[in-house]
Length: 290
Ligand code: FAD
Image (tube, rainbow, N blue to C red):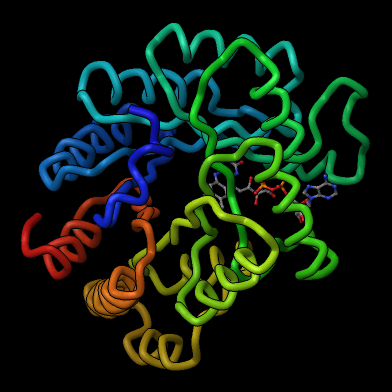
């Protein structure tokens, strides 16, 4: 199923994101998580790929397994920094042969030791170049892209970031998934700016339920996502009590999702961190199952 066709049917499209585990134990646990989340009927799931293609083979293997063995529409993330054109073309051929119809085209982040170096002449630098490449090739993938309600950390300004996003969508991106955010006002303001700039594709909110106070602060900093004072205060009060943190995180994310759906968001993309309980509980609060 092409993901682009799922949106716009007056029903919130629910999707889950996973990352390839490092160990066999993590892999077994991921399969259990996917089985548990499959029961609530996600429209699709996606699997990240480490920057520079570091998890390339594992990512592709899991994507194929989800699509072909578990019967769930799967999307492969493709961060193009440090992956050459020939390697990307080979990956796309392989995915298409395996029946995968969806990719998330990403600029990705260069390895830290190469952050200031120029990519090889033939390599991609930004996601819009990858989108152009896929569109100009023999493939017929539905293409998603990333976007940043609170502005991409490397962008020099919100206006420049938006102009780059317009370029990426014009290159042929079918839908956008946002970076995590905790205050829906940031999403609504961003969608309004994107629409005013002529972006018409679905802009799907990406939601990460907080399950660990220290982790979320680190991730929020990396993602340039502001933690609202109210949420931060609540989390600080329970500090290292993981159950209490998860309860606050689940309540906060549930309220965010309810408000987003009520206000017409095309769906919710959950950053699951390979765990199912918080996402299942949020789904139960929203739709009464899970
Ligand atoms: P791009 O569209 O490439 O933009 C990156 C920066 O460059 C922005 O500041 C933008 O304004 C600027 N820019 C864009 N185009 C141009 C241009 N033509 N000229 C000049 N400047 C330009 N990372 C991973 O490594 N693996 C993953 O699996 C992964 N999954 C993700 C999933 C989602 C939903 C999101 C939102 C992010 C994900 N990331 C992942 C992180 C992402 O790769 C990084 O944030 C990366 O820095 C940007 O990639 P991008 O495709 O979103 O940005």
